[in-house]
Amino acid sequence: MTSDRTALSRQRRASEPPSRPSRPSRYPQLTLGCRVDAQSRPLIETALRPLPMLASETAEFWLRFGPDTDNGGFHGRLGRRGEPLEPATKGVIQQAQHLWTWSSWYERREPTERVRQAADSCYAFLVDHFLDPNDGEFVMHTSATGEVVTPDKLLYSQAFAIYALATYASVFGVARAEDIALRCFDSIERRAHDSAHGGYDVSAESCWMSPGTQKETSTHTHLMEALTTLYAVTRDERIGVRLAELADLCATRLLQPAGYLHEEFLSDWTPHGSPLVCYGLDLETAWLLVDAELTLGQPRAHVIAAATRMACHAAKYGFDGEQGGFFEEGIPHGPVTGWEKLWWVQFDALPGLWWTYRLTGETLYLERLLKTLDWLQSGQRDPEFGEWYWGVRRDGNRGENGDVKGELWKAAYHNVRSLLLTEDWIRVALAQAPLQ
Image 1 (spheres, one colour):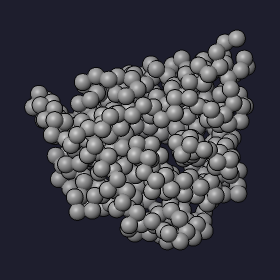
Image 2 (image 1 turned 180 degrees about the vertical axis):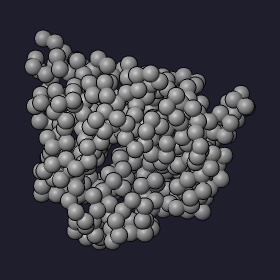
Image 3 (image 1 turned 45 degrees about the vertical axis):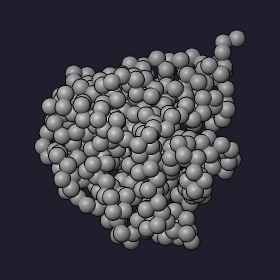
């Protein structure tokens, strides 16, 4: 069956429309932020040291156990040892995250046939089973073999599909993937963009939101992430305009005077619901804002200031000063209320803290980056079977998701993305400040 799928993958590549040349890295020289000095260099070099090994070990786990060689894509659920589990439902977010991961891993670390096959398989499963040809958007869930289980089309899901397809198109020069991403963007623009107040209306999407919510933060930050890559790939002026709008909204509407990102809003961006800060989301959004502004080409001062402010707030109030790492959530400028340490929060803290250091010049954030890396290796990592536990409670026990390694909301994406980008950004910064 594996050899049959490899042959099908090669046939698919041969039958795709003419390829466009793959594009170079978006910004090989980073000019934003402080320069490495004698005080910060030892901390930076210490932070750099474990990143390649951690990324490689994570990639090996997923490339060994993740691919569904019978049905395509990646397994919907993996146990602690990497064994496939039931229910085997596959999610568009999960499969798109794997597509981004293996496209990026191929581009940045391992341009081998096995990684190409992993990316091709995710691409094929995504467009063959999740894509609705009627409107160009993607359904939420399928069975392991690809039958639609949940036909809902969340904006949050479309963001990950666009992000992954644009990356795959760029890395491998697949024109059809870029066209599908653009068509999906056009569809969500028509049905959900708010021309009066900016942003996108999610009032028809119940999902995890509270009643009455009309706009939601995670949807907007991940749409911004998606359009950052889509704009870098296409240089389509419409995408650039919308990307600039989303970055501005993050800086001026999502960010509150207290320095945190509110989660839910009414259509005019009036905050809806109780104040609550998700430390990982704020750290993630900070570096996504930097990425967006660098891609647009002329970073705006108010957006960079907003990114710095939200990151500093999260780094101050969400950090575990005793063991390292970050808790889940809390009251703005107040106590932690969600004490579990989630794997994705720890990983998104790495690039978040890196850019907080770059934007402030304060080595405090390098020290917290180092302590977060220490926590990841000593408290979040599975020393026996590899990969990372979903969540760890204050008493050291695993959280409610137990020792599951792969699930609809847990893929290789957060881990590999943060390790890849943080390492690459550090290497660029060190290269720009050679030893005297």
